[in-house]
Image (cartoon, rainbow, N blue to C red; front, side, top):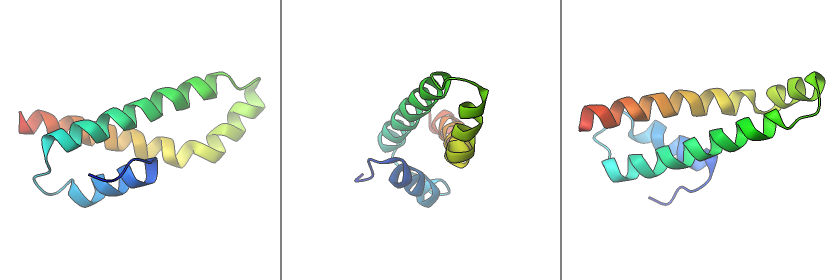
Length: 82
């Protein structure tokens, strides 16, 4: 499991979500995506004013949506694997 950045983690999940991926690897990716989401939300909250939050959403909205979807899919896959 070599992916350690956001794009790599999302790519890994796209490649492995239909297969029987290693649960330990899935938990590692899930933990990194959850950490990214928590940091993203904290950084967004720190934007001074609605305009900069709107700009933030424009820049990171696609990543945020992809991460939220991957987190939900990983959680469901881990439940099925348990």
